[in-house]
Image (tube, rainbow, N blue to C red; front, side, top):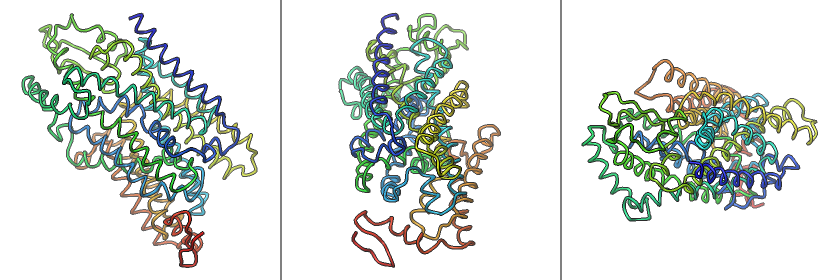
Length: 549
């Protein structure tokens, strides 16, 4: 255990040194560096940064565990999160880049000529990003807690210190290049265990092609153990919940402010489209591997752990029990571990798999480093989104338009530190599993920004009253449904809290359209500006005609 600790700690410290070094080398000196990395990031590297931004703790740590425990029903997360990128890449990203602002609230404020809409959008950004960051900090606590064999809460506070430092120091410029390094580390860390497990179980090094054989064997094991078959659909929820979750994650992806801002860091609309294409490739490497990871982990647990004497379980079970994320109880008193006597948090499956599969201490350390890269990369992007919404959209654009660059950077860095500390305090006792908390953030994004941006780009009649009330109503409906479903047991069609976005988005679209039609239409200049967004950068729409620039 001592050797494993030293190896894991060495790998993680080496990667931390790399991230901090990159942040210092790429320190933001101007506001354009801090918010949009000077708009000079090449598409392929921006695609990697988007991938790292996207491969949050929920993706790296939680998703394979969710699929392992939910089976077929867990695929909604993979399909929703991946499909959302197609929506974003083709429906919104190029048009938002052409508009040329720093943040989503800035686009909404300028497109609708409304400080009220800008402030509401900034508040929504802070709420969404803050909710999402609680999940990331909770994930970092799981990793650090396991590494040091301490309570995950102490690990969370260590993660808070790290994120607050490098996000506040480097800004978007530092975070972009840090995320390129983090993506490289996390994808290597994710693929190596699943490739080795595929070789162990099937003799084939390509898990994407081989895990079907393991799933077939697992179905037989399920029948023998008398548990619900892994591939049976809608056993953990209704088909309406599956579809609602799918929509919530897709629309939420297309409305996530910290992801959208990544498309502002490139130079042109074409570069924005290519960034999305590269991001899909980099994201697909992990998302196509998650079902294989889940199947292999579940199979190994069922074959090698379930059915063993409880007093002779592998050593790794003791270390995970110490973190509070694994519980084992001999409920029937026979001294043998049954599947139903083991309560394993879906947040530890990826982290525990190298030990479960006995892949060696180096792989254990590598996965820990990859998990920290995933949590840190997304948390850093989220903190920039929170900071830019407060320091740029509220402080500079509304409260103090004459503020100097030095003051704006100082306010941005202070707001990052405060937001990270507050999110870390909540993450000490998270209100749900990582994937669940993240799904709430997506529900809020789907209910606020997705309708606002889609109508803002594609419907010239949408006005400031419509977008303002649309965001307010969408946010209120989504929050109400999340709380009512989680704490009050209230559901419609079996749709639980993670599918709340479908109700919030419907309410926001309806409110935006109805209020816009009942109030004064936008100015002719704004309507032409909206039509202009639909054409390539070398073309412009003016006076009812399309002109070459």
